Amino acid sequence: MDVKAMVISMTGFGQAARTTDGFRIQIDLKSVNHRYCEIVVRMPREFARYENAVKAAVQQHVRRGRVDAFVTVERDRDVPQAVEIDWSLAMGYVQAAEQLRERLSLKDELSLRDLLAIPGLVAIGQHQEMAEERMEAELVACAVEAARELSDMREKEGAFLQSDLMQRIGTMEHYCSTASGIAPQVVQDYAGKLRARIEELLQQAPPDEQRLAMEIAVFADRASIAEELTRLQSHCKQFRELLKSSEPVGRKLDFLVQEMNREANTIGSKANHAQLASVVVDMKAELEKMREQIQNIE
Image (cartoon, rainbow, N blue to C red; front, side, top):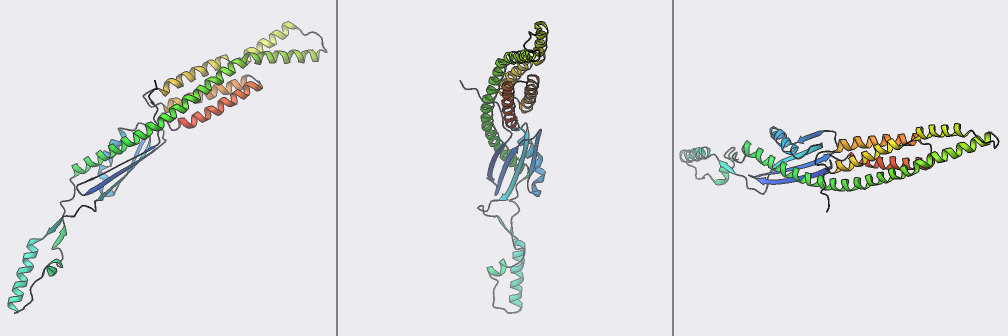
């Protein structure tokens, strides 16, 4: 049975658009890595009073990361504009024209074209402006829709990150097992080299076995990596558990990788052994790849 992905990526994109009451609203969300939760809203100045409402709607779906919200509000060109006629002004012009025609004995009559040329007689209606409560509700609904799309994308990317990190922590556990198998050989190799060196210096004379044993024991204690490997294995287990958590775990995972890197460095410095040093190099390279991936996790 597959484990449901709990890891959420901090990078993603979401978009939503809607048309209502002659207006077209579109909101684009873009999220990137950030230590905290930061939401920046960019929208036309005339609608700036709705910024906090849009920000609050997006924030319900994002717990960590920087989100840039781009809001556009435009009149829908496909919707006919309402036109208002100043009937009082029109009647006044008609009456004035009649009076002029009668008094001056004119034959011309006032035409529709003449009336439409009168400034202010015909104007775009103001009733199309959406009420504030309605505009805010539409903006919030659009923001929620975009935020859900953003969340879906972040979850899908998080699933890939979880799968990748699960494989890498398995690789780290393999390196721990390899290092554990090499550890006894480190002491044996040192003992052999020390004995050979002493015999060479003493010109094949038998070395003091008790003194040699004490020297080997001191080295074995100083070069022991048992504690470091135990802690490293414990960190690997914690890492696996965090990957299944429903809470934001990016910071905790980052801390664990730092601790694992510290243990790897200690192992490399304590045991001066070529084979073990090679394993430590592999460990550190894997940890660096893990650290890069973790930077994207919420």
